[in-house]
Image 1 (cartoon, helix red, strand yellow):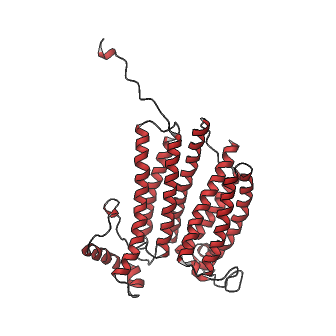
Image 2 (tube, rainbow, N blue to C red):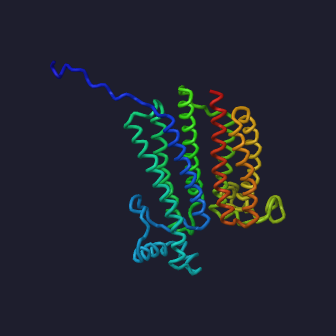
Image 3 (cartoon, rainbow, N blue to C red):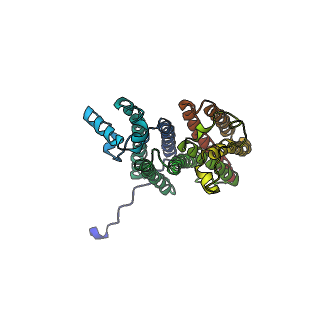
Length: 351
């Protein structure tokens, strides 16, 4: 037979593995959760500006000898944070190593997440194990992860030249993108799990109650990030009143409402502590809808919500004690995960 007339080889058969992909995405979401927690500790310990270079590959290796540590410390000594705050306070190399550790761990987790997702995803692609319609979603999540790394460095850059801390706007964008990646990973993982169980590709849809719940959470997390970035948690250590008043006296309206709403630590703290009750009201209603479909998801929302409120109050009353504040951020991320779970439950039933 003429080789030119022989039939072309058939493409390799597709063997979808939705359950394995779902497990991979849940692992990635767990790693992102860990990174959010370490990121919170990094912010609380003022460690975020300790590494002044962005080296995506070689930066995974910390300083290994005295010369390397001296070089890293000298780079940090050129920053406004050291010259104006830590230098006059007497920071030495030993203290620098402590803050360096948290920033290095935070960046290392980012690198590990990239590898933990990209390498298995490539394997699934080669084996043609990705179900139809999910390839673009998985690649999109991978690209969001890459964007998160770039956004993290963009945030750090804001504190290396003319500021002693990072921009609270860039800080909030960095946190919200991380939580978006975690939430999207959970959502797609649940869709894949449903496909594996039922054999039908029917992704959950985003319903109005879910959109409302995620929107009020978005506002709360945004103002929480601004509280952290502006150290606004330090302006009052009493609850429910601030310095004996419901609305604190310290709010400065002289530069206009827009500036006050985005820069004034008293107003931002006030909004964050009271918008929390809007979140409570909305999530309780949503959790009741979820309870009729999946009791476990409803319990997860209620448990995370109640714990988060108590931790928020404890953080204020302790003057932003590091471990209370870190737990507050961790449970906040858990609340996002539980809400996404509940939203998916409602959306799957609606579909």
